[in-house]
Length: 408
Image (cartoon, rainbow, N blue to C red):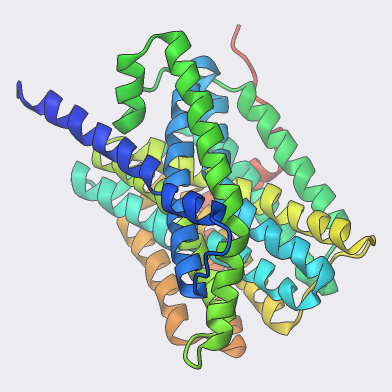
């Protein structure tokens, strides 16, 4: 036991050093004029830079938790950890304002990120938490009702978006209002002290308040620079690789590879919480991330598109994008109903993963609608079974006030 602490510190230091080195090759290559790199190398170096920057952003946000309320810190952690996703998606939306062909990539990246978060992220955290605790389900802390309520609001509204064939500025306004209400409620909610893990804990133990805050600023600045210089080349590189390939559809490449790179750190942090028997905290961060993606990310897409296009029109959707949005909404609704009773069973998690992975075998638009119907059928069955407990909870969460009440 005496040697475990030094080993843990070395491991945390090496993790921090490794993440800090990951953006360097791209930063150096980006500064060298006349360096002709193939699209494959550009995408690889930029993708590694985004991955390393995402880790650093996550640790920096955890450190900042020491100086802001914990309820708000979970929101900020979830928000910052998906900033790489925002950088990529907003690039596609902005480019679509000049070249409408890129509209499909903005929707592909957004729907892929949302479905990956639930189909893999949520499922893996629950399975690991159940395996470590010896239980058949993960008990979610009652504080997460806040996130579940706003996830339900955003999900129910998301079914309206595809009806017009456009993601309008009105959709952006509604979703951003939901996000602001969520941020306000999270900032005024209950808080508790949460111990840090990994490199964030190493920095916190090593430096006093001023030093810790300096590290937060430095990590944020370095990671943000690496991510935002890499986002456009990475996104464009994926598109060009897909177009040049006779095997890989660029839509699917953008839909799955880009979110996988940008969200891996968030998954790993949540998995680490689950492994250390803090599964509720891990799944709570992923639920919060889902709310952020469904509100702020989706809401920002038509704004970026309209600013770039110089018009009030929203981002147009074709039949394939409508199908992807409806499928993403249906998955989100089923997942929210799964956790509405604050219990997330291993069977439910595995069913989310199975349905998600099954979509890869049938990528056609028609089959997307079949999966959408399957998600909705399971959701209805959940709401009418078990004496209607979930149905009553659903109605209560949707129509009750989102604002926390403070105890006197």
